Length: 384
View 1: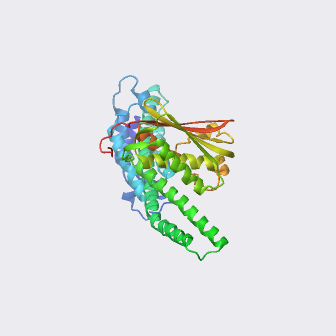
View 2 (view 1 turned 90 degrees about the vertical axis):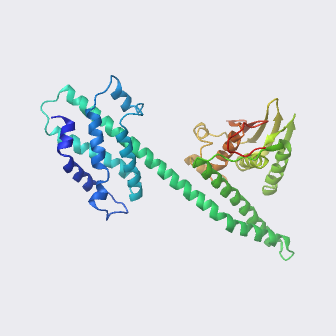
View 3 (view 1 turned 120 degrees about the vertical axis):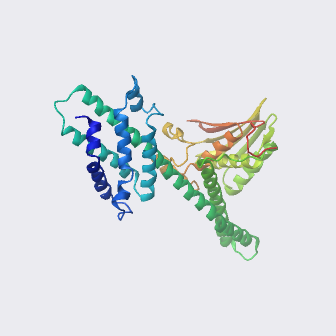
């Protein structure tokens, strides 16, 4: 018996089985109607059956199984994505979504196998094609579902970061005001100073969250470029970090012509991330910052001594929200552990047409930033 024909003949009972399976999932929308639970089951199965029965050129089944046949079966792609979007709204988890496809595959194959004569080679070929079509539907559905989860997370981070700015501003201003009064004793002054330092650190984290959200949702970091001196920017950042970390020793050296056309605020943010990171993670002083001018670009190197960064951790060093278990255990006080600082650093360098690299061994860790003296022009971006 032809597999596609079995699926068509028994499609109603297959859809009913899909509904019962979906009803058994522990989701927030347990009160959904059978029509809501059935969702796109019939349309999806019909698209898959049509794909199974369609003629193919040599090599096409392999292309589909490896995911390289991107334009095949648009009906499967469209229906699978609609199904993912609806299940996301209905509160299904990703494993629950995947389990639906496993159940649908098993339901069809069980009915087909019950009507089989002794197995023929063409029957097995049809089963392979059915599995490939199901895998395409599963891939398309989970891909869209994952993007929606990411977008929801990024939106939450953006709202959180935006709403935290006001109370943090109040804390910062209040602590600054108290430090300017003459009514505090020594212990009180130290306490208020710690409040101010913590508020400044949290403000930096909130800024990184907002920048991450902007880029994760597809926006490019805006630049307002103007003539700038990277040595002056570096001196200002080193002084600011030294104020927050008075126990740290930070050495700055500038060589050659180090002027260019950059967004000074963004470059300062990038350097602040690297220098603060070196101070927080360096096991011994000093931290060294070297600014070097070349013909068409300026390079900044930030070096700290200490244990090398593990090779596996280096692979995701500039990827946000990829903190390893070992990295979390070794995280120093003052570090969020989200990886946003280095991510934003890379985004700022790339927006200027530059790059960031890292070298970490027994001699210490060095981050190197290369910035062209003149960033490439960008449509819709800021510039001089």
